Length: 381
Image (tube, rainbow, N blue to C red):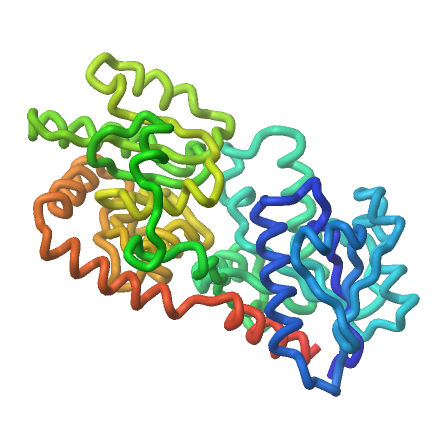
C-alpha cells in the first residue's frame, strides 16, 4: 500500500497551458485534492513548475496534498529523462505518477502513468514527423515499465492490451470529465449567440464539428456527405462549421471546400475560446463526429451537455461514451453519413429524444469520478 505518492506536474507549465494534457492534469489534481481531504493513510506530493503556474491552474496545496516548485522543471527534457525520478526518490516516494507518457530510462519505485490512447502507434501514417517518432518511443517505454496504466476508455484499454500484450489488470479505465459549469444548455446559460455566429461568418442553421483538423478525423468524408445532402435537398439552408486548429494533412480538405458550390457554406473557424465554443455547441442544429478513431471523444460529451443532438461514427470509443444518446453511422460510408444527417435534421422528435438522452448521459462523466478512480488505483500500488 503506497504511503507517499509523487506526481509529475510538468504539464502545468505555461508551455502546455490550454492543451489537453494541461487540462487533464489540472482538473484531475483539483479533484484529487478535494476528494482526498481527510485521508490520513497516504499523501500526494506534486512537483510543479512555479507558484505562478499553480495560480494559473487554480490549484491549492495543503498538508497531505503538497505542491512544490522544482527548479529543474525549467529544463523539460532533463526533468523527464530522470530528474523527476531522482527528486521523487529524495522524498522517499513509495510510488510515482506521471499524468502523461514520457521516457522511462530507469525505475526506482512503483510507476503509474496515464496513456490517453495509442493513436500515434495505431495510425503511424498520420504521425510521420520526427517529433511523433519520439512520442511513439515514449509511449512504448512508458507502457513497458509502468506497473499501472490509466487510460480513458475500455476501447483504449483493449487496444493497448492486444497491441502490446499487456495484462489487462495493469490497465485501469478512468473516464474523463468535462467542464459542466461551462457546457450547459442555452436556457441554463444564456449566450450572446448572434454576435458569436456573426464573428465566424455563420448566417444560417449549421452542422458543427469540433476538434483538431487531421486525416483521422475523417472530415473529407463529412464534407462529401454534406454535399450529398445538399444535392438531395437543393433548397436546404445549411452550413457546415469545422471548429479547431489545423494539423498537417489538410490539403485534400481545403481543395474540396474550394469547390464553387461549397464556398461560403463550409466554415473553418480555427481555434476558438471556450466562451465561443459553448455558443457554437448551443446554437448548432447538430454536432457530427465522423472520426475513424477516438480514444475518448470529449466533444461528444460537451455537445450533449450543451443540449446539441449528436451523430457520430460507430467506431472505437465513441459508442462507449455516447451510449444510446447518439445516431450512429459507418465512418467509411459517405452515404450512411448523409442519411444520418438527413434523418436527424428532418425529425424534430428524434432531435428532442437525443438531446434529452444526451444530457442524462453526460451526467455520468465527471472529473470527480475520474479522480476517485485514479486515487483508488494509486492506493493499491
